[in-house]
Image 1 (cartoon, one colour):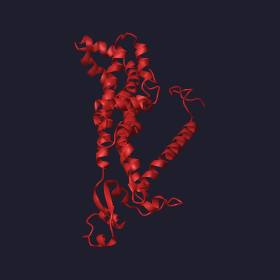
Image 2 (image 1 turned 45 degrees about the vertical axis):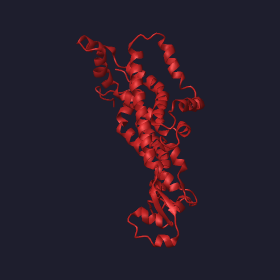
Image 3 (image 1 turned 180 degrees about the vertical axis):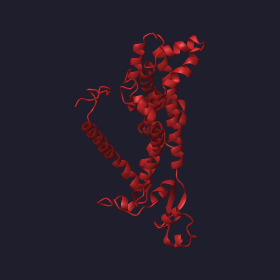
Image 4 (image 1 turned 135 degrees about the vertical axis):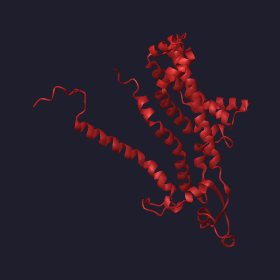
Length: 318
Protein backbone atom coordinates (compact mmCIF):
# COMPACT_ATOMS: atom_id res chain seq x y z
CA UNK A 1 0.00 0.00 0.00
CA UNK A 2 1.51 3.31 -1.08
CA UNK A 3 1.92 6.22 1.27
CA UNK A 4 -0.62 9.08 1.06
CA UNK A 5 0.31 11.69 -1.50
CA UNK A 6 0.14 14.55 1.01
CA UNK A 7 2.78 13.02 3.30
CA UNK A 8 6.32 14.40 2.91
CA UNK A 9 9.16 11.93 3.03
CA UNK A 10 12.89 12.53 2.94
CA UNK A 11 15.53 10.09 1.79
CA UNK A 12 17.87 11.46 4.47
CA UNK A 13 15.39 11.12 7.34
CA UNK A 14 16.63 8.56 9.92
CA UNK A 15 14.57 5.45 10.49
CA UNK A 16 12.94 4.62 13.77
CA UNK A 17 15.66 2.08 14.57
CA UNK A 18 18.39 4.61 13.89
CA UNK A 19 16.73 7.13 16.18
CA UNK A 20 16.45 4.53 18.95
CA UNK A 21 20.09 3.51 18.63
CA UNK A 22 21.28 7.11 18.52
CA UNK A 23 19.16 8.05 21.54
CA UNK A 24 20.45 5.07 23.49
CA UNK A 25 24.07 5.94 22.71
CA UNK A 26 23.55 9.55 23.75
CA UNK A 27 21.96 8.52 27.06
CA UNK A 28 24.73 6.00 27.79
CA UNK A 29 27.40 8.57 26.96
CA UNK A 30 25.71 11.18 29.18
CA UNK A 31 25.52 8.74 32.10
CA UNK A 32 29.18 7.77 31.74
CA UNK A 33 30.33 11.39 31.65
CA UNK A 34 28.24 12.20 34.73
CA UNK A 35 29.82 9.44 36.85
CA UNK A 36 32.88 11.53 37.91
CA UNK A 37 30.68 14.48 38.86
CA UNK A 38 28.32 12.24 40.82
CA UNK A 39 31.29 10.64 42.58
CA UNK A 40 32.65 14.07 43.57
CA UNK A 41 29.30 15.11 45.03
CA UNK A 42 29.07 11.80 46.94
CA UNK A 43 32.60 12.23 48.30
CA UNK A 44 31.75 15.69 49.58
CA UNK A 45 29.21 14.08 51.94
CA UNK A 46 31.57 11.37 53.22
CA UNK A 47 33.80 11.38 56.27
CA UNK A 48 37.57 11.38 55.68
CA UNK A 49 37.89 7.65 56.52
CA UNK A 50 35.00 6.78 54.18
CA UNK A 51 36.51 8.87 51.36
CA UNK A 52 39.69 6.76 51.27
CA UNK A 53 38.11 3.40 52.13
CA UNK A 54 38.97 0.43 49.90
CA UNK A 55 36.95 -0.89 48.27
CA UNK A 56 35.16 2.43 47.74
CA UNK A 57 31.94 2.84 49.67
CA UNK A 58 28.78 3.39 47.65
CA UNK A 59 26.57 3.14 50.74
CA UNK A 60 27.62 5.37 53.64
CA UNK A 61 26.25 7.63 56.34
CA UNK A 62 26.13 11.21 54.96
CA UNK A 63 28.17 13.81 56.80
CA UNK A 64 28.71 17.54 56.37
CA UNK A 65 32.26 17.30 57.71
CA UNK A 66 33.72 18.10 54.31
CA UNK A 67 31.74 21.35 54.04
CA UNK A 68 32.55 22.26 57.65
CA UNK A 69 36.25 21.76 56.97
CA UNK A 70 35.98 23.75 53.74
CA UNK A 71 34.45 26.84 55.29
CA UNK A 72 36.42 26.87 58.56
CA UNK A 73 39.95 26.65 59.90
CA UNK A 74 40.50 24.29 62.84
CA UNK A 75 43.03 23.72 65.58
CA UNK A 76 43.68 20.49 67.45
CA UNK A 77 43.07 20.56 71.21
CA UNK A 78 43.31 18.13 74.09
CA UNK A 79 40.24 16.13 75.11
CA UNK A 80 40.26 17.91 78.48
CA UNK A 81 40.09 21.32 76.80
CA UNK A 82 37.22 20.25 74.55
CA UNK A 83 35.34 18.72 77.49
CA UNK A 84 35.55 22.05 79.33
CA UNK A 85 33.93 23.95 76.46
CA UNK A 86 30.20 24.81 76.49
CA UNK A 87 27.89 22.58 74.44
CA UNK A 88 28.30 22.80 70.66
CA UNK A 89 25.91 25.32 69.11
CA UNK A 90 26.12 24.18 65.49
CA UNK A 91 26.46 20.89 63.65
CA UNK A 92 29.91 21.92 62.44
CA UNK A 93 31.03 22.51 66.04
CA UNK A 94 29.86 19.02 66.97
CA UNK A 95 31.55 17.39 63.97
CA UNK A 96 34.84 19.22 64.52
CA UNK A 97 34.93 18.43 68.23
CA UNK A 98 34.45 14.75 67.48
CA UNK A 99 37.88 14.96 65.82
CA UNK A 100 39.41 16.63 68.92
CA UNK A 101 39.51 20.01 67.18
CA UNK A 102 37.81 23.38 67.57
CA UNK A 103 36.87 25.98 64.96
CA UNK A 104 39.41 28.81 64.94
CA UNK A 105 37.71 30.98 62.30
CA UNK A 106 36.51 31.12 58.71
CA UNK A 107 38.60 29.82 55.84
CA UNK A 108 39.58 31.68 52.66
CA UNK A 109 37.12 29.84 50.41
CA UNK A 110 34.62 32.72 50.19
CA UNK A 111 37.21 35.33 49.08
CA UNK A 112 38.66 32.86 46.57
CA UNK A 113 35.22 32.01 45.22
CA UNK A 114 34.40 35.72 44.93
CA UNK A 115 37.62 36.30 43.01
CA UNK A 116 36.68 33.54 40.56
CA UNK A 117 33.27 35.10 39.92
CA UNK A 118 34.61 38.63 39.44
CA UNK A 119 37.54 37.61 37.22
CA UNK A 120 35.72 35.01 35.11
CA UNK A 121 32.53 36.98 34.48
CA UNK A 122 34.40 40.28 34.10
CA UNK A 123 36.80 38.90 31.50
CA UNK A 124 33.96 37.11 29.70
CA UNK A 125 31.97 40.34 29.43
CA UNK A 126 34.95 42.27 28.07
CA UNK A 127 35.94 39.52 25.63
CA UNK A 128 32.40 39.19 24.25
CA UNK A 129 31.94 42.98 24.10
CA UNK A 130 35.20 43.59 22.23
CA UNK A 131 34.70 40.48 20.10
CA UNK A 132 31.22 41.56 19.03
CA UNK A 133 32.36 45.02 17.94
CA UNK A 134 35.43 43.69 16.14
CA UNK A 135 33.50 40.89 14.43
CA UNK A 136 30.86 43.38 13.24
CA UNK A 137 33.57 45.63 11.77
CA UNK A 138 35.18 42.73 9.89
CA UNK A 139 31.79 41.50 8.69
CA UNK A 140 30.29 44.77 7.50
CA UNK A 141 33.14 47.08 6.51
CA UNK A 142 35.98 46.85 4.02
CA UNK A 143 38.91 46.55 6.39
CA UNK A 144 42.35 46.78 4.71
CA UNK A 145 44.20 43.45 4.91
CA UNK A 146 41.17 41.91 6.59
CA UNK A 147 42.22 38.34 5.88
CA UNK A 148 45.72 38.94 7.22
CA UNK A 149 44.36 40.61 10.34
CA UNK A 150 41.91 37.78 10.96
CA UNK A 151 44.73 35.27 10.58
CA UNK A 152 46.86 37.29 13.01
CA UNK A 153 44.02 37.29 15.53
CA UNK A 154 43.62 33.54 15.14
CA UNK A 155 47.39 32.97 15.42
CA UNK A 156 47.29 34.06 19.05
CA UNK A 157 45.53 30.72 19.73
CA UNK A 158 48.19 28.62 18.02
CA UNK A 159 50.40 28.21 21.07
CA UNK A 160 49.42 27.33 24.63
CA UNK A 161 49.01 30.49 26.72
CA UNK A 162 51.42 29.17 29.35
CA UNK A 163 54.21 29.40 26.74
CA UNK A 164 54.31 33.16 27.32
CA UNK A 165 53.91 32.89 31.08
CA UNK A 166 57.38 34.15 31.98
CA UNK A 167 57.22 37.35 29.84
CA UNK A 168 53.73 38.06 31.18
CA UNK A 169 54.92 37.48 34.75
CA UNK A 170 57.82 39.93 34.29
CA UNK A 171 55.54 42.51 32.63
CA UNK A 172 52.90 42.21 35.35
CA UNK A 173 55.52 42.56 38.08
CA UNK A 174 56.80 45.74 36.45
CA UNK A 175 53.31 47.21 36.00
CA UNK A 176 52.11 46.21 39.47
CA UNK A 177 49.37 43.95 38.12
CA UNK A 178 50.54 40.76 39.83
CA UNK A 179 48.00 39.30 42.25
CA UNK A 180 45.27 41.76 41.21
CA UNK A 181 41.78 41.14 39.88
CA UNK A 182 42.30 43.74 37.15
CA UNK A 183 45.43 42.00 35.91
CA UNK A 184 43.71 38.62 35.67
CA UNK A 185 40.66 40.13 33.94
CA UNK A 186 42.86 41.82 31.32
CA UNK A 187 44.87 38.65 30.76
CA UNK A 188 41.86 36.36 30.33
CA UNK A 189 40.22 38.93 28.08
CA UNK A 190 43.30 39.01 25.84
CA UNK A 191 43.30 35.22 25.59
CA UNK A 192 39.56 34.93 24.90
CA UNK A 193 39.02 37.86 22.56
CA UNK A 194 40.48 36.06 19.53
CA UNK A 195 38.07 33.16 20.02
CA UNK A 196 35.20 35.60 20.45
CA UNK A 197 36.05 37.45 17.22
CA UNK A 198 36.19 34.31 15.12
CA UNK A 199 33.01 32.80 16.53
CA UNK A 200 30.97 35.99 16.37
CA UNK A 201 32.10 36.92 12.86
CA UNK A 202 30.56 33.69 11.61
CA UNK A 203 27.28 34.48 13.34
CA UNK A 204 27.14 38.09 12.12
CA UNK A 205 27.96 37.03 8.56
CA UNK A 206 24.77 34.95 8.62
CA UNK A 207 22.60 38.00 9.43
CA UNK A 208 21.31 39.51 6.16
CA UNK A 209 22.66 42.97 5.40
CA UNK A 210 19.25 43.95 4.03
CA UNK A 211 17.88 44.31 7.55
CA UNK A 212 20.43 46.98 8.40
CA UNK A 213 20.03 48.71 5.05
CA UNK A 214 16.29 48.97 5.64
CA UNK A 215 16.93 50.43 9.09
CA UNK A 216 19.39 52.97 7.65
CA UNK A 217 16.85 54.00 5.02
CA UNK A 218 14.31 54.53 7.81
CA UNK A 219 16.65 57.04 9.42
CA UNK A 220 18.59 54.88 11.89
CA UNK A 221 22.24 55.64 12.47
CA UNK A 222 24.79 52.87 11.98
CA UNK A 223 25.14 52.45 15.76
CA UNK A 224 21.38 52.47 16.26
CA UNK A 225 20.92 49.85 13.53
CA UNK A 226 23.63 47.72 15.12
CA UNK A 227 21.96 47.84 18.53
CA UNK A 228 18.37 47.44 17.33
CA UNK A 229 18.82 45.07 14.39
CA UNK A 230 22.08 43.11 14.59
CA UNK A 231 22.41 42.46 18.31
CA UNK A 232 18.94 40.90 18.80
CA UNK A 233 19.62 38.45 15.96
CA UNK A 234 23.14 37.70 17.15
CA UNK A 235 22.09 36.92 20.74
CA UNK A 236 22.37 33.16 20.19
CA UNK A 237 25.94 33.51 18.94
CA UNK A 238 26.80 35.88 21.77
CA UNK A 239 25.43 33.41 24.33
CA UNK A 240 27.39 30.50 22.84
CA UNK A 241 30.57 32.56 22.73
CA UNK A 242 30.07 33.74 26.32
CA UNK A 243 29.79 30.15 27.54
CA UNK A 244 33.04 29.09 25.84
CA UNK A 245 34.89 32.15 27.14
CA UNK A 246 33.53 31.70 30.65
CA UNK A 247 34.51 28.03 30.78
CA UNK A 248 38.12 28.92 29.95
CA UNK A 249 38.33 31.81 32.43
CA UNK A 250 36.55 29.84 35.14
CA UNK A 251 38.78 26.75 34.92
CA UNK A 252 42.14 28.36 34.04
CA UNK A 253 44.84 27.11 36.38
CA UNK A 254 48.36 27.84 35.09
CA UNK A 255 48.19 31.66 35.00
CA UNK A 256 46.24 31.71 38.26
CA UNK A 257 49.03 29.78 40.00
CA UNK A 258 51.80 31.92 38.52
CA UNK A 259 50.28 35.39 38.84
CA UNK A 260 48.22 35.16 42.04
CA UNK A 261 49.07 34.10 45.55
CA UNK A 262 46.62 35.71 47.94
CA UNK A 263 44.59 38.81 47.16
CA UNK A 264 43.37 37.75 43.72
CA UNK A 265 43.77 33.96 44.00
CA UNK A 266 40.93 32.04 42.39
CA UNK A 267 39.42 28.67 43.22
CA UNK A 268 41.43 26.40 40.83
CA UNK A 269 44.80 26.95 42.59
CA UNK A 270 43.11 27.10 46.00
CA UNK A 271 41.31 23.74 45.84
CA UNK A 272 44.39 21.46 45.63
CA UNK A 273 45.88 23.01 48.77
CA UNK A 274 42.98 22.26 51.09
CA UNK A 275 44.94 20.24 53.64
CA UNK A 276 43.40 18.45 56.60
CA UNK A 277 44.82 16.97 59.76
CA UNK A 278 47.07 14.06 58.82
CA UNK A 279 46.87 14.47 55.03
CA UNK A 280 44.64 15.56 52.18
CA UNK A 281 41.08 16.25 53.26
CA UNK A 282 39.29 14.67 50.29
CA UNK A 283 35.72 15.46 51.47
CA UNK A 284 36.69 19.15 51.74
CA UNK A 285 38.32 19.04 48.30
CA UNK A 286 35.19 17.40 46.87
CA UNK A 287 32.99 19.98 48.61
CA UNK A 288 35.04 22.80 47.11
CA UNK A 289 34.83 21.20 43.66
CA UNK A 290 31.06 20.81 43.99
CA UNK A 291 30.71 24.45 45.00
CA UNK A 292 33.00 25.48 42.14
CA UNK A 293 30.94 23.62 39.51
CA UNK A 294 27.58 25.13 40.50
CA UNK A 295 27.91 28.65 38.93
CA UNK A 296 29.16 27.44 35.55
CA UNK A 297 26.52 24.70 35.56
CA UNK A 298 23.72 27.17 36.31
CA UNK A 299 25.00 29.66 33.71
CA UNK A 300 25.14 26.96 31.03
CA UNK A 301 21.67 25.63 31.90
CA UNK A 302 20.15 29.11 31.75
CA UNK A 303 21.65 29.67 28.28
CA UNK A 304 21.25 26.12 26.98
CA UNK A 305 18.59 27.08 24.40
CA UNK A 306 20.73 29.89 23.03
CA UNK A 307 23.75 27.58 23.03
CA UNK A 308 21.98 24.93 20.97
CA UNK A 309 20.66 27.53 18.55
CA UNK A 310 24.08 29.14 18.32
CA UNK A 311 25.84 25.87 17.52
CA UNK A 312 23.37 25.07 14.72
CA UNK A 313 23.05 28.67 13.50
CA UNK A 314 23.31 28.75 9.72
CA UNK A 315 23.34 24.97 9.37
CA UNK A 316 19.90 24.89 7.76
CA UNK A 317 19.01 27.28 4.99
CA UNK A 318 15.60 27.88 3.54
